[in-house]
Each structure stands twice: as structure tokens, then as C-alpha cells.
Length: 91
Image (cartoon, rainbow, N blue to C red; front, side, top):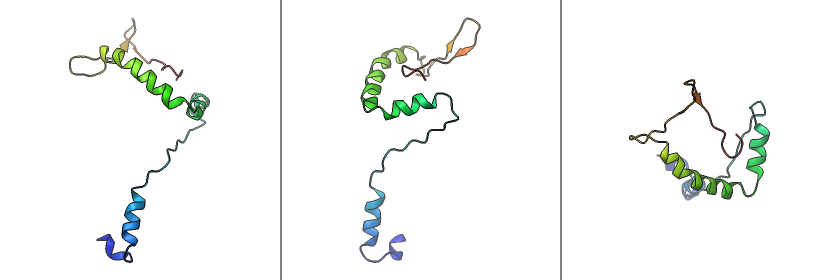
């Protein structure tokens, strides 16, 4: 269908271009809480390696916090309020 609007050979070039990997891009909103920490974290050249290690370490604990259906159980404090946890990056 689209091949008919391209000159011969251009469609193949077009398709190959669509399959090229794009760089990862993050848009950080300076109005968000802790945006400076997020920016610094993403600029850290060792971030991906460190993050992968943390995920491996946390995986067993995360599995323990799941119910029989595999759903994550919320963390509830003594007053019955659902609590949010900071991750190891302080966010």
C-alpha cells in the first residue's frame, strides 16, 4: 500500500530506518518533587548496573510480599493507612 508512493528502493530504506534503535530520552519536569535526584541518578554512568543489582537483591523480598494470586500486597501501617516506601535511590 505505502510502497506505491515511494520511488523504487526508497520503501526498503524507509522500512530499515523505522527499525533503527532510537536513543533513550527522559523528560524531567522541574516542578516534580525530587527532580534533582532523578536527574542526578540518570546522569550517573553506573546507574543501570547498580539498578540491576538492586533489583536482583530485592526480587526475593518482593516475591514474599505477594498473595496466592501473585498480586503485590500493600504495606499497611497500624492505623490502616497504605504506606508508600522509598526505593533505595531515595525516591
